[in-house]
Amino acid sequence: MIPSGTEISSSLYGAWRLIFVDDEAMAHFNVSIEGFWRSFFAAILALPYFLVVIIWPAPVAEGVTPWEPDPFMAGLAYILSWIIFPMVAAVLARLFELTQNYIGYITAFNWAGALIAQPLLILEVMTHAGVLSADAAAVLQLPIFVFVVWYGWVIARISLGATAWIAAALIFIAKMIDMLLFLVLM
Image 1 (cartoon, rainbow, N blue to C red):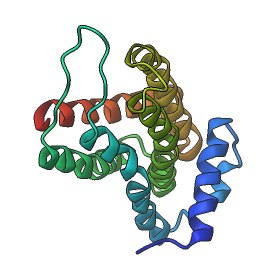
Image 2: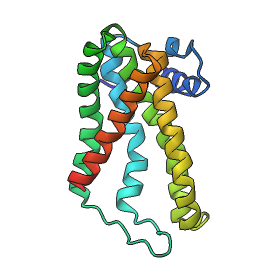
Image 3: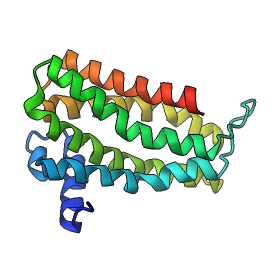
């Protein structure tokens, strides 16, 4: 199921509004069961960033060993990253009695992933093209990671209606899943 152009742009706009902690941002997402399934199309929109990282070897900071992932295993990790967290989040939403907002949460989370990938793609291409040094890119990684964690927390707070602690637990688990997939498969 491919979402319409209107649904894609509205969802990306909703993801953009979540950056500004806009309580009305959820009105831009299709939070029906169909919208939930179509939100996984965001994986296609985020794919160029993933492909650049995997296929085009990035320059590395001085003294750092270059990373050369196996493309098949990296692809498997990418696919699993879009599947495992929603499954774990479903269990946690039930545990924390937040199932009424689960569909909206995953829908917003998915579209936010597509939105986040775009500036990361630009940063990656700038690094590969030599516009940005590997050292400068390395320095930017920490603030970018902090922003992504904060953004995930905001998404859980607004879309799921989670408490601050539950939102923190969800984003922690999401990042742990990503790290485990990275360590095990790549």
